Figure 1: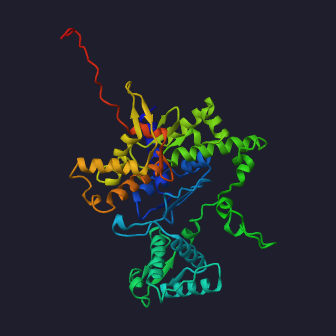
Figure 2: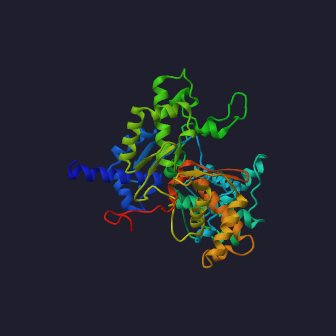
Length: 422
């Protein structure tokens, strides 16, 4: 490969991973990253469509790139978070905040500019008129105003709106506070990534409610019956879905275990043609593919597409998760690894022993329910990374977890040449 071709490949792979990490990329937030994506937008648009079946739009004039990621496996461990200065305060959105976010978006579609007070009054009116919605009461309840402001701040962070003539935070403490809200409706419309329009979920003829709205939103007609591994499905649709679904998981999930795949996905991944196609696509994205008997993982050596680095320094939860691996993986006399399921109580006891052994570590987790919270955080992290499966009190290690554990030191006698008998 020539130097020019190598540089072009490197730039494109960086752009791919940048979009995987930031599917809504704002030029104002990262001019260098946006310039890279804009430069290669033609190749990127075709690559994402061929590889994942995802649509990419790059609006150079508006300064926004939108990669519409789709999946039939929504990840509940990656919620929207409440915008806060401190990471510790950035808790996930709850049901109320998601509800208000959707109501705000529905109202902003109809007007390019409004004020906080007018928007709050409109939401109050809408919720009063719909018995299926919890009534929005901003004047009486500060918790409602805080949830309302969190939703607005999230939209501002996405570049959908900006405020002038006042501060959003003031409305939390004072229901009379106000500010002008200006809306970028083009960007607002780009938030939706579903192939199915939400307005089609309810059958207007009989007024019936959809059985599973989330599943119907995630449904992509281009695959037909192939998503159910229907052998009678069109062969072209079946192959397209298998390629796209596997590429989506490899590029966006921490790990893909073979026992989690459908029969069709497993057959494609283990076929020579399927393996080669996926290897090529993963390499084009700049990942290092790790293939094991139990599953595959695409490793980003530069962590451009990684939203959570593990292992990582400076985080007690990550350190605790790494230390728990030694309790979940045992080694026999020959040094072979064996996965062992444990209970949460067993893992907490293991951490208590470590806290006792290392007096200067995790000082804030030593009082009260600190050890239990540290254990729960570590187990949750391992589950989010696909390294363990949690069933009630039982924590079941998954095969890819073993890659992080160290082999026990060798204790057999080593004989160097010329030193026999010593």
